[in-house]
Length: 143
Image (cartoon, rainbow, N blue to C red; front, top):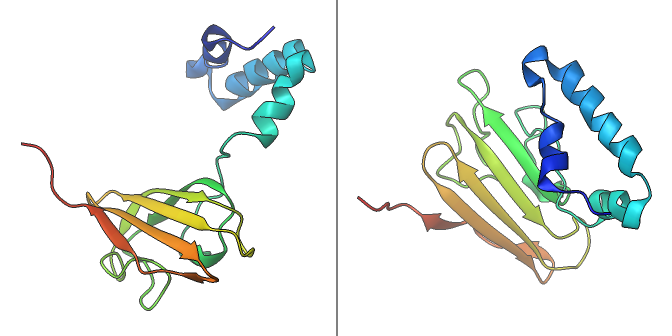
């Protein structure tokens, strides 16, 4: 039996009761479905993981694990200058999401996409042993 959208939605039943209720519902769902069709193995090993928060304490994008990471830099700790971040973002506050595809610290090809609250989207590739320059993917919008 596969997990359904209804099963996933059940995790958030009672979410107004707080994070503890959501965790309780999630654990219940896991207990009910453990081992069925190797679902949990698939969820844990074959999907894009939600990664760690990236901020002023760990701003290096050159050694990020595969997955989706949220990031945030505020006035008291802006994106560091002369860093692995796009030049446009450096010395500025910003928050959003980084998607990292590929395994860090290996010769494999990797890709990073940044979706920034300033309306910017950036992309860069790791090929032949080094990161390329950041490319602006989007700066114009439909009216």
